[in-house]
Image (cartoon, rainbow, N blue to C red; front, side):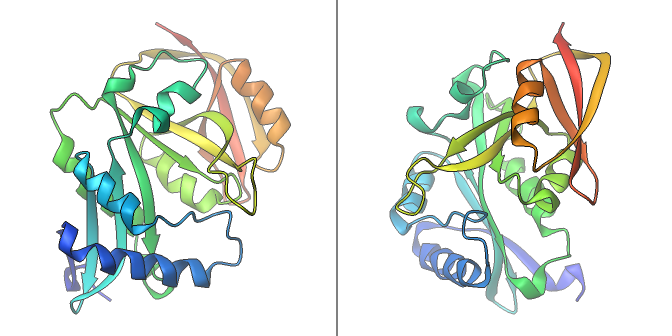
Length: 224
């Protein structure tokens, strides 16, 4: 399939049901439900009302992928979850949900949709882009790290009936404000070793890349 066969459109309120139906299909196709957290219709409508955006990918007028960007409510703001960097919460915008039908994966749509939706917020106050991704999904954060984001925290997020304490999530950041330099100290750790990762984050390391085996390179930084 050629990329030119795909159409990219911003989703409006009247088309929200298409996104809800797509999320249901994606959720049904995933074995590990902790990887993909589907949104309810009212969540998506609230996202648009607060100034967020959803970009849809269409093939022959059928929605096959989407990505949402969220201007977070105060209690959702990931700036408060990050202990080791001073992030102004008013400048945060969050890469929220992303979903791609199975037969359309491998087309780089995660990165393409991220770029498409962020174009709407160029030259605005939103200078800190953030996102959460499951540690057990290294393919997803490999794409994000390669786009200039770094892993800056690991926390339990998104509690539900199945997991009242929430699920492990990496918090990733791409900042236009924070200036850092590397100290030269670095370490490689498997994504499965969450306790070691937490220790490295406390020691002011950030995750900068991950290989095909899920080994993450953490490099120590200092603020300049």
